[in-house]
Amino acid sequence: MTLSIGLVAHDRRKREMADWLETHKSQFSGTRIFATGTTGRVLQERFPDLDIVALKSGPFGGDQQLGSMIAHGELQAMFFFTDPMTPQPHDVDVRALIRLANMYEVPIACNRSTADLLISNPKFEEICEQYRGHSPEQVFAEYQNRKV
Image (cartoon, rainbow, N blue to C red; front, top):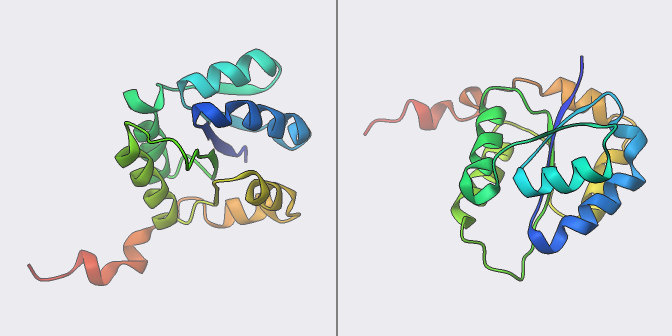
């Protein structure tokens, strides 16, 4: 089954994301890439032969679109190169996206070294498939069934 992978980079990390994708381009052949708006445009221009879908820009709902894909089991991994030195106007959306990735066991890398480790793992696709459609309700049943 084809993997769907999210690629996101804050403005100061977009070039690094594109360079990283260049290094690992062969591993993304046959993969559907979903990226937030500006990141998607940067990557589409540089890699016209890859299947890249540009969603809305992060601050205009792109992070939430990716989060929805995670919640519906439509995204199997995410690479999000964050900029820890620049305040983001949509920081709450970023935190929500990372939270959903953690809840749904979607592998996520937030910097280049972790991204390298994740994508170079020979079991990367197997792990992504293993957790495809993971249901957090089982893990967090106590919370879901709490008395209020």
